Amino acid sequence: MWDTDAPAQRETELARTNGNVVWTFGDIQLFHFMAGFAAGVLIAGIVAPIGRVAVLAEKPA
Image (cartoon, rainbow, N blue to C red):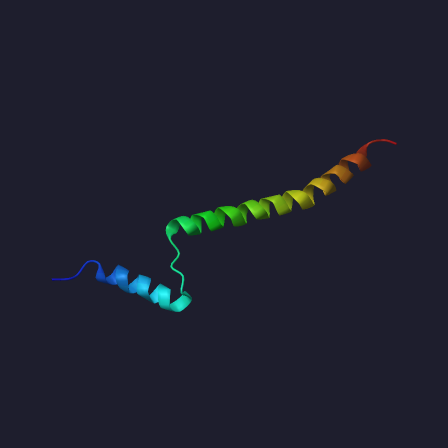
């Protein structure tokens, strides 16, 4: 009879020994959200001034 918990237990032990940190699914989701949010803010911060300059340049003086 197989122990169903053995593979999962081995994986967590492996993760613990490798990085001393076991990431749960929730932590990874949060990290991805924060990274995506930061990237979005960064891109918006770069694109918005360029767009503003382009709009001002199009206006007849």
